[in-house]
Image (cartoon, rainbow, N blue to C red; front, side, top):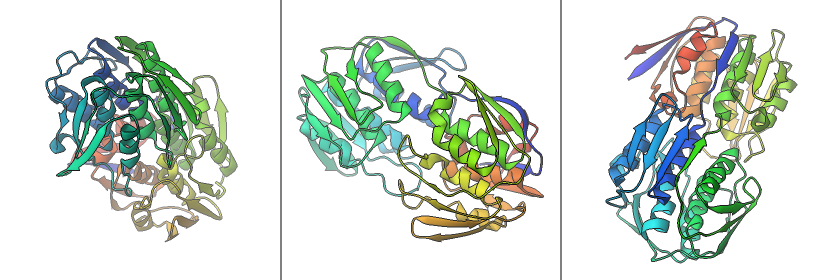
Length: 418
């Protein structure tokens, strides 16, 4: 396993370009199962999760070719089976996204219950209940979900709680169902909107994506399409925090500032300067940071995927802040590692009480999940001394060559083999 060695205390300066959104690319790759024609996706990041999903699609019988560094072509005209086995999906919860497309097009699916980051239970019961309303027979057997339906039919579905992958899974399934499907309390994330745009390019009829009510008029078949994945808003936010935590001046290019309004508002409250264009964000600040409290919420609220990074920033801000996690339980596993670096953080229930310290100290730390990894890298960039971050395979699931991009901004960071 690799680790990152960081010598902190250097203000980051320059320009950095973010890649396509992993959380948009994965469901769009799954959407290729809905047609036998070619789907060409641009701006697909080279990440661990993307490689895992390519392996899953190839196992099912789809052909996947990377045309260049950012473009892949997918064709699901030779699907030989409808089972996603445990060994392929155990590390990535997004694997469940093949369930809806397989049932919709082939009438059956057998998918292992998914894994992923250990940040609390994320059950797929909402997916399964929705498929049953659409006429599928669903059962659980030896750790697998089995779903069968000669033909799915439209239904009105109200999700008990907002679920991004549930919204995406059922939206894909409904695209080939008979009649109209209406999703209530649907997730509003930009990644859901981006998937709907791809599906509509494939011939689907979807309205309302990005709002709590999505209407899908099923069609008999879908065709090939070409689509560019939206920029990764979490990677963008991470580099924004990197500029703020080091007192630097960084411009993030090829991003969509409109997707980060909650993050931008909170950063401005800390005292840093944030300037926006249509496709870039500049963050600068060399003055003292102010403590700011945040509460995570589904989009357009403050993203849970930015909570750990913002906590690292608050650990060196003047005064106190409270960071409340409302989306996932057990998502404070980075706290103990930040405390090892000198942070003053106490967790009570779903709230972390952070009292800013003048400076953090470099230390050996261990990543526990994807976003926790990012927070430890950010803390290392701002620390005095050397920080060693182990288990960076978590980081590689969601950030492409983050050390190379940080080096381009002046950071003293290197990847070494364990």
